[in-house]
Image (tube, rainbow, N blue to C red; front, side, top):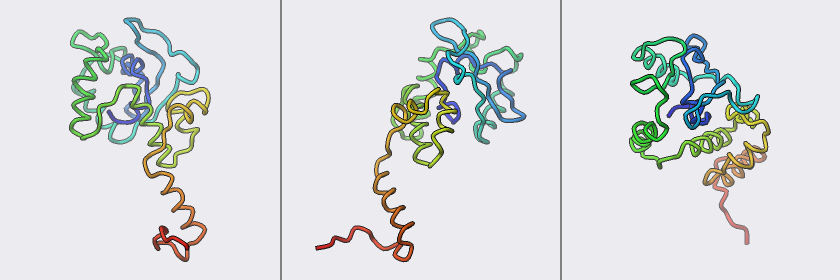
Length: 179
């Protein structure tokens, strides 16, 4: 599952229609959700948002669009009958096999959102950007619930600070002990 889809709650992925995908500008508009058999508006103002597509996701959607003809109100991820696909089937048929091919743990839908937020933090992306991508009204939700520290991140942070403060000794091992 390519970003930005990992930032989107699965109920909104299942409700995504082609009229909300702008293949020219490379953006998605999240306005609707499909939950327990019903379509409805997203829950909050922040959930109603535009998300930019990266080049890989954009090309994937362009190819998907060529294979799946239909009108602007058709679902992007539809069953053969045009109805929303089952989240369980999508997970078993697409998500888990992709995780297996990439040799990463199988993640839940919600796990992808945590991973998305954590990777953005690890890459140094501002919290406000992660908050906007995840559709959170409060940045504390993004930071306190969705963002997890990567293994080794504290050591990396300390070493970066040392290289900043002491550039003349950058590159030397910092694990020397003082007696």
